[in-house]
Structure formats: structure tokens, C-alpha cells
Image (cartoon, rainbow, N blue to C red; front, top):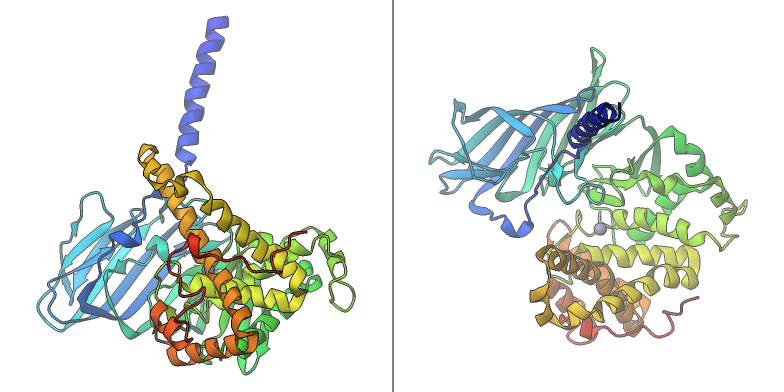
Length: 491
Ligand SMILES: [Zn+2]
């Protein structure tokens, strides 16, 4: 009896582990920015995606047409997703064989020596996520209740070529009719076909970074200064959204940025803000669409006591959670100015993240006062920077050789994150104290105006802000940080 029981148990364990393995996240290794080389001899002019989502099976069918202008290349590399299999590939109307680079998700497509190149690719399958990114930066999934696809997953195969100043994007997404899709650019029309809805959109864009998001959404339209914000959230969270005045804050953030940075980059495309699943923590911004994770507006009703009847802060105990949640939305919205509006060229510690964090902090400071904004943001940033600055393996660089490679990589990531997200905005705050808020913000408004729909480098910024000395000039990172007196008190 005993041994029989053991045999049964062993079989169950084996079966169980088999099932567990089958349920493992469906992943691949996404490429680092560093590994990507862009062919400058050819540029992308237009992209026309037609996508159908099968939410029942978690798969998609894609038919994508790309237009290029070729100035002397004989091939185009595409960054693809391992989960999506190519069914056909045509170059200027002719079927073509393609080569897959070994161990990489890049395909190489030969092209003729002519100026106008059109490539049509039909592919389908289940999007694979980044092996190291599940949870933290999950770039995509298709499920019955929601769809979340970010550009980083290459769910739309990405040609590794230069981009035209404005890329013509138009196409459609098809999904079951109970889902509301949030499309990039402008929604042109919605057609209902056999239990599905076809969401037709068009967009003139300076990048190909488009995503696709869908859920059973409620939509609130917010009108601010002649432009429209579309706010999509699940009806389950409507009561919280109303009680905690989330839409009012979104409007307030928009007004604050327009006043202190400049006009929203477009009056043709509405800003779309969508609540998304907790599978993707934090937020995201690309083109005119931003997302934030559901936990932001899915808090306990005891949070209601933070605000009194007039919507003013009454209870300081939980205000840090509320400020942090609003900060996430404010951070992603700030990327519409620094990221979409102005293309901030990354040069660590300089990137759009520092500017986004500085401006979301400024909004929280205006709304909640110095005490909350200093504690929740400045204090936390300063502590993290100090912690890393004093960290043994950062201070003793030569000791790193003895460490595991993965650990070094994660340490580097943490260090870079602290530089981009915390050190840089701390430098802005310091510079603001030196120049005075009014002068500093006017300087930034000028930079925004001059670089709208253009690139902005660190050197441009330093020069135009007259920052030939002072904390922002210091490119050397941790040693250059100066504490901000009076602003870093911790309760
Ligand atoms: Zn950001």
C-alpha cells in the first residue's frame, strides 16, 4: 500500500511540475538598446497596421505594410517577437525569403536598389514577454478581459532604420465588441462586424512607438484649454475616481503644465489616459497615450477621509499614498511634454525622466504643500542616492570583478535609475533655489518652445539655461550631489 501511494504521489508531482512548467510566463529575451544598430541610409515614411485580436486564445493576427525611402541600402533588419510567426513577406509586391539571425529575434530582408520600398508582412501568434521583465516591465499580453501591448515587445515588428520627421500611421485594431480599445492618434471610426468592433485610427507621428490597450472601460471626457483628455477606467473604480477627484486632478495637472511648461504638443490629437491591469506596475507614456496601473485608483475607501467636502486635504496620515498615486499620473502626463512633445536625447543622468519627475513633484508641491512633497519625493530620492553612493560595490569599483555578472548588471541598473529619476530632479530643485522659481521655470518654457517636436540634448539645455556652472553642469554623478538645505527634513 505504502509503495503504491508513493508511486501515485510521484506521478502527481511529475504531472504537477509539468503543468507548472506549461503555465510559466511565456518569455523571450528582449534586446538592449545598446545592441540595436540603426541603418541611417534608409528611413521609415509610413506604417499601416491591421491587427485582429483573438482574446479567447490570447493571439493576434497582423498584416502590416511599411513604406521606406531608400538612399543606398540593400537590406532592412526588423526587430521581431519570437512568439509571432511570419506567414508571408513581400517586398515591392514580390514574395521574398528572409533570413533570421541566429539566436536573435532579428530578421534580415533584402531590398532592391530603388528609392521607394514597400514591405508587407503577415504574421500571427502569441506575444512573448521579456524574460527579465515579467511583473516589473511587462510589455504585453492579450486576454479575455483586457489587452496590453507596449512597443518594447515588438508586437509591431520594428524596422531598424532612421525615421522620417513625421511618419504617417493609419490602420485598425479589431477586438470583441465588449472591449473598448484605446488607439494611438485619432480615432476615425468604429465599425461593428460579427460581434467584433473595428477601431480605425490615424496618426502623424515622429516615432513608431505605438501600443494597444483595451478593457471594459468607462470613458470620461475632460475639456481643458481647447483640448480634450479622454480618461478610460473600469466602472468598478468609478466611486473611488469620483470621491478622490481623480479627473479634477488630471485637469489640474494639464493646466499646471500648460502654464509652466507650454502648450500641449497637439490640438489635433487628444491625450488618452488609460487605467491598465496590475500585471504592469507603474505607468507608461508613448505618443498621445499614457497608462497607469489599476492599484492607483483601487484603494480602500478609508482613503476618502483624506479629503473633506470641499476636496481639501483633511487627514495627513494617508496623504503620502494619495500623493504618490497622483504623482504617477502626473509623471506620465509630464512625458507628453518631455518625451512626446520634445524628444529628450538620453545622456545619463540626463533624460526625459528627470524632467518628468521634477514637474510631477512641482504639481504635488503646489497641491499638497512643501511638507508632503519634500517627504514623499525629495527625501526619498536623496536617501536612495545616498544609499547607492555609499554602497560598497559602487565605492569600490575594482571589487566588482569578484561578483556574479547578473548582480553587477542589476546594480548598474539601480545606479542608472537613481541617476535618471532621482539625482537629476534633485539638481533641478537645487538650481531652482539658486535662480528662483520664476526665472528657472521661464527658462525651461523657452527651452520647450524652441525644441517642440525637435530633439533636445543635455548640452542644448545647459547652454540655453545659461548653466555653465552650478549643480546641473556636474556630469560626474554621485560625488556632485549637494544636499538641498531645509527641504530634506524627514518627519
Ligand atoms: Zn517616466
